[in-house]
Length: 256
Image 1 (cartoon, helix red, strand yellow):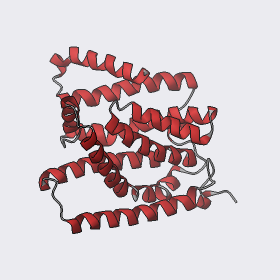
Image 2: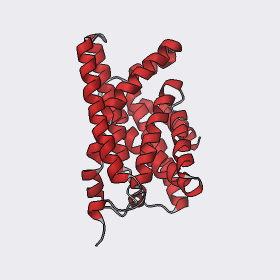
Image 3: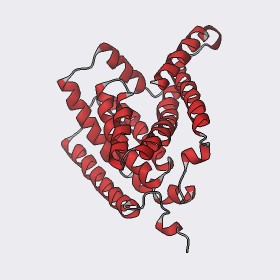
Image 4: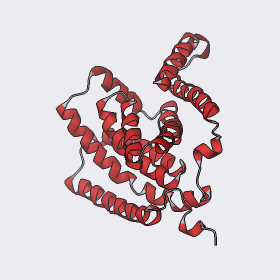
C-alpha cells in the first residue's frame, strides 16, 4: 500500500512537471516506478537498519559463486515458465475477456521502445525483487513459517499488479522466487529469473505479432519439448544444490 501511494504521489508530481520535462508516457511510467520504489526503500531500510549489501546478498556464499552456480540452472526454468503461463493467461482471457483499459495496458507493456524495455526488463526486476524478496519476504521469514512466508509474499506480489491475469503470474513466479531467496538468501538469482521472464514476454509478444500468432504444430511441440527438458535439468540442478541448504554456503564454498 505504501508503494502504491508513493507511486501515485510521484506520478502526480511528474505529471505537473511534464511541461518542463517533456516525458513520454513510457518514460513517465518508468520514472514513476524508479522514484516511488526509491522512496519506499529509503524509508524501510533506514528504520530497519539494512544496508544495500545485506539486502541484495545476505548469504555466506560469495556473490560470484551464486552467480556462477545458481543463475544458469535458474535461467533454464524460464522458457517452460513462459510457455506455461502464456497458455494459462490465454485460457483465462477466453474465460474473462480483457477490458479496454487492460488491453491498452498490456499493449503498452508489450512494446519494445527503449523506455518500456528499460522499465520492464531492468527496473521492475531489480526494484520489485528488492522490495518483495529483499524486504517483504525477509521480514515474513523472521515472523512466520517458511511455507507461510513464501506463499504470503507471493500472494502480495501477485495482488500488487492489480489485475487477475498478472496476479496468477505473480503468484506462481512469486512462489518460485520466494523459494530461491529462502534457499540462497540472495537477490541475484531472483533478479536473473525475473528479468529473463519479463524479457521473454516482450520477445514472445513480438514473435506473435510477426507471425500473427500462427505456428505449426511441429514448431509448438518442439518448443514445449525443448523448454520442458531445459526446465527439468534446471530443477534437478537446483534441487541438488539448494535442498536443505537454506542460509548455508554452497558445497563448493564451504570452509574447511
